[in-house]
Every structure is written in structure tokens, then in C-alpha cells.
Image 1: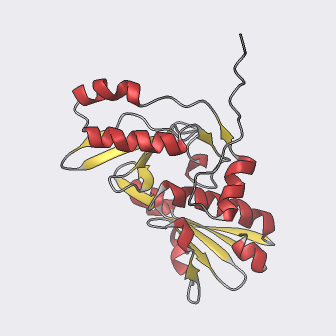
Image 2 (image 1 turned 90 degrees about the vertical axis):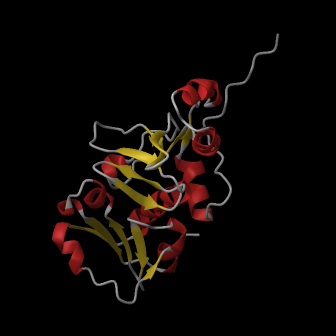
Length: 221
């Protein structure tokens, strides 16, 4: 009898990411065994979940399930491991798919929204990025910026409103919604507004300003 080789812990980055994000996933991520979704289909349908929403959960699980990435610079480090679970919601408010367990006890959870957005749900829904790809791109860009910036400054609360982003361009690959990235001449700015929106807590606004970047530091692939 031939022994089955253990599955590799090295993930293969899903298609559609930038080169920078692919390097991030494959060099710094770990792929752990993921739970199947299809075995829950009948029970979830009996629970009232539409088949189309189970299909969405299964598609997310096939693409991202079991992927563990380095801690995010905000949101209490982000999900521990990406993975779908029982969709929550209704036909009137829309359906939301849990995107992975939190690393610590928190007042909100990470969700995939009705339109595929990656966000947090606390007091209300706050879509951070237009897709999970955008979330991963944001993590990759944060890791890259930390590595290459000459200086990083945190700006919090009302002081975030005073940031002057005139002359900065949005970074398109992060697909920012509530959260955005901005690229200037020698600076990258990450604007984290999700907790302020999702928890109705303006004091939770935070921006990270990465300065002293050359062309490679601004782009990184």
C-alpha cells in the first residue's frame, strides 16, 4: 500500500492578483486543511439558506478557504484563517458569508457581502474592499510598505480628517470602499475607516502614512 503524501502547506496564489500580492501569498502565507461546504448543503437549505448563497460560500471556500496570512495592520490583525461558514441574512437585507474566525474576541466579524465585498459587520455592515482580492492586495501592500518605507506614522481619530491627499492617486488594486490606499510622490497612505463605520465609532478612524519610498517602494510589482 502506497502512503499518501501530505498536502503542501505552501499556498498557490489564486489567479488575478498582482505580482506583489502573489509573492506575499506564496512566501508568507500557509495553506491549512479546509472544511468542505457541500456536506452542509442539505442542512443549510433546511435552515432557509438559498442554494445560490451556498454556491457563493462554496466558491469562496474553493478559492480562499484554508489560507492563513500574516496579521493585518488593523482590525485586530484580521481573520486567523480565511474560510466560509453558514451564510447569514435574509432576502430583504441580503446574505453575508462569514469569511474566517477572528484572532481575538471582537465586537464584529469578517464577512463577504451580497455583492462579493470583503468587510466587517458590527453595529452595521462596513464593506472594506470590493472583493477578497482587494483585502489580500491591501495586506500585501502594507507588508511591502513597512519593509521599504523610511518612516511610518499612525494618525488616529479626528486628526485623520486633516490629512491632505491632494495630488495623491487611489491605488486601484486594493479595490477600496470604506478602506482606501493612496499613492503620492514618495508616500503611501492607508486609510482605515471600517471600524468607524461598522461600529459607529469615529474615534476608531486611523491612517498609516509610509514615507521615504522610492519607485520600487511605491509600486513593488
